[in-house]
Image (cartoon, rainbow, N blue to C red; front, side, top):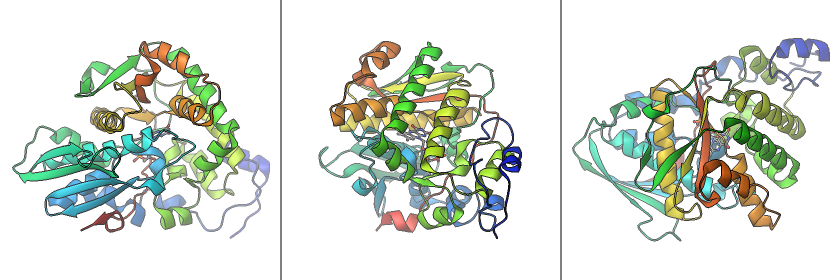
Amino acid sequence: MTTQLSRRSALKLAGAGIGSVAVGATALRAGTNGVFRAGSGDPYDLWHDWAGMSGVDRVVGAGVLACNPHNTQPWRIAVSGGVIDVHSDPARRMPCNDASGREHFAGLGCAVENMAIAAGPAGFTPAVSLFPDGTGSDLVARIVLAPGGSSRDRELADAIPRRHTNRGPYTKAPVDVSRLPAGIDGADVRWVTDRDRLGDLYVEATEAIVADDEQSAEAFSWFRSDRGDVDEHRDGLTLDGQGLGGLTLFAAKMLPAQSRADGDAFWVKATREVHTATAAAYGVITVDDVTDRAAQVTGGRLLARMHLAATALGLGFHHMNQITERIDRDRATGGPDTFSGRWGAILGRPASTGLVSFRIGHPERTAGLSPRRRLADVTTG
Ligand SMILES: Cc1cc2nc3c(=O)[nH]c(=O)nc-3n(C[C@H](O)[C@H](O)[C@H](O)COP(=O)(O)O)c2cc1C
């Protein structure tokens, strides 16, 4: 079906707020583009099926449902009896947007932590060792499951299928950060009090990313704007995950797919007018040295725990890493380092300790589900 639609009615359809998505369009997309199937169908099954799973599958499934950078799902998982080996998949790295690999390895840490959290209530005692073959190896972690469960992490485990990244607006209500985890062995959280200064730095870093042709193109290559792309790839970012209001999301799905330039402009606008404007609090996961592989994984473990704890409290959680992406990019390209000094000043610690960051708050909208590849496609054994 191709229906002509005037720019004016498209604007009306897109509605208020950040309704600038694809308003230059003049034709509707074929079919309904999954408008009525958000969060359902094959790529979303694991979210719905996980609660009914048991044994080692339940633990592995928890890892696959973890937050991870750009939904690259950077893992390959080998299962042998009660031993789970979590490998990095180097083909799923993003060299322009994550030049140092900190997000890739933090994302693997998120999967490891989700598995460790799920293990106790599933009837196992997990023993996790990081890089058992050394930090040069793709084997990031080995999790050995011994019989004998624990209900210590039950609340966090229950939050696993309800945890999503929420990129929508948050209310003005304050957040009591003392109810969230303070740290784990090797990683801590730093709560940022100067929200305006950090918000401005996020906007500036976002503008720098979209002005960098290679970074922008690489990010766009992980955006699945069409339901057909979602069904084919089952990874990447989607319209459902952008925190749009109902009418805007409907319009964005029905109108022709956004160009890279439109998407970049939308992202800068949303960062300025929604993400930083409505953040109730910002947290930064800190480690001794952000370039250390084991520290990246350990910081990721705290990040996953934090996201689940926020979910259990009903809070919205949005990972935001534009600043560190630019720091790593400038270092990789030999460009002038324009962000480290200000990043370190905001942290009150050396910039080399600020690994990944996020905003939290009471969400105005329910977050959409993100697709996942089949367990059979990411596991062996
Ligand atoms: C290490 C790491 C870095 C991330 N960085 C960002 C980011 O800068 N901006 C963003 O919107 N989401 C970011 N995310 C969130 C992911 O895009 C998200 O987890 C993924 O798309 C899967 O969606 P879900 O969390 O809703 O399951 C990050 C997640 C992780 C674990």
